[in-house]
Image (cartoon, rainbow, N blue to C red; front, top):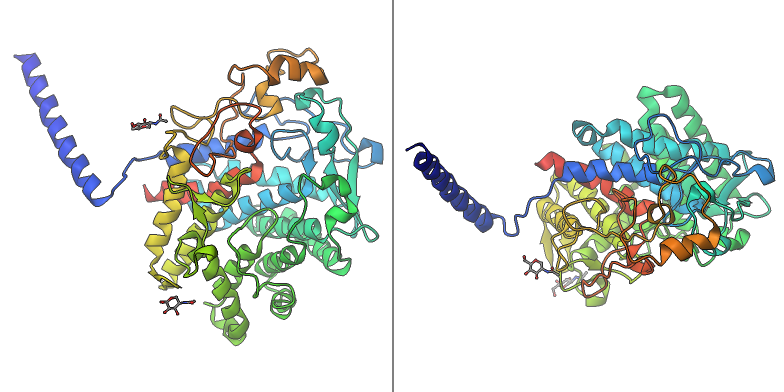
Length: 505
Ligand SMILES: *[C@@H]1O[C@H](CO)[C@@H](O)[C@H](O)[C@H]1NC(C)=O
Ligand SMILES: *[C@@H]1O[C@H](CO)[C@@H](O)[C@H](O)[C@H]1NC(C)=O
């Protein structure tokens, strides 16, 4: 009979499946398979949610609308555009620039893989949304506008960006009020982006490079901590590590973009004094870029023309090794290693811990590909690591983020069947402008939306929230900002990694 034949076939296929699954499970423990292509596409949508300014015709995230259209007006400068950093409506220059550097680096390393997932144009749009803004903000060779709005007055209200009534005062750094971190990071972002636009838009690429060179010179010549000049940033994006890492970082990106000896010389001559070859790090973040500097410098070592700088580049290499071995738990001394949660997630600190995980996953992925391409292994105190092991570890962190964790929760919003529903995000937690164009006031947002126990009306697709605590625990409550706030630099770090993992599939 027809039906029994079908049943038999079903039974057979089932048996075959089970056999295959058990085989796969034997060879690849924890073989839960994730859709990295989808994660990549979702990530890029998130940058549209964070857009400030006049939204373009092809804006896909349609619960957002134009906002911040008078930014800079008080100071007589056009600062319309750019990105909100996280769940508030302030535009912070330093993390915005770091976000664009990470996105550009991802597109430089994995552009072909991003393209094969059909996401290259979206990636370039996300980068250009930032670089267009940096060009506007760099009004004179030694003037960079680095913030619009301030944390204190912004946090006093819970409002959609479309309704903002809070102060939109803009802040700048200049010769008398220097800010080498933010000048350096913005230079790095523009230099990295200039590499990407070289072929498709050479005029724009040269413009980016021009701004990058001027900004680096400004940051280097007029040295000073940016949070001393722009005090309102303190408590939000205080620079703990100072500006020397950003200056080295900017010089390296300029070297990559121009191949001019002067930039390499800067990285070599200042290696020791600026801590590039002395700091052994366990963190890579919007504040602390040493591990990134050390990674790029050590990769130069493999090129013949850099052999004459072997001594210093080797010192850089030993320090990036320390960072990578720390992530792998393979440094000899346990306090030289990064803690992990019982579920296996790297754990640096409580507030927005996932940013450190995402940054580590990115750096480890890039470094594993570098080792693979140059046929090297990594020597850690507790043993030797091959590139595949390094990449597997990065993958394990990403898989944890996507749902392979004790809460069975994807920390990438919109991904999978279970993800955070109450992201600490003003725009996403209030009904959209599209649904309700009526004005929603400062405290009205708190009364009607912030304290509302219901899920957010708008899903902030692609946002990567702060994530679980040191015991893998996570509480999906809007007021729980340490775990529920997402930041642009969290997601930016995973774009390249998702593309790399997608390609593997
Ligand atoms: C780490 O420990 C191993 C074995 O005890 C030792 O051979 C190695 O030199 C140590 N490495 C460092 C960097 O201290
Ligand atoms: C996660 O899934 C596992 C396996 O299905 C289950 O045993 C566990 O109770 C789940 N945990 C939570 C917090 O839902």
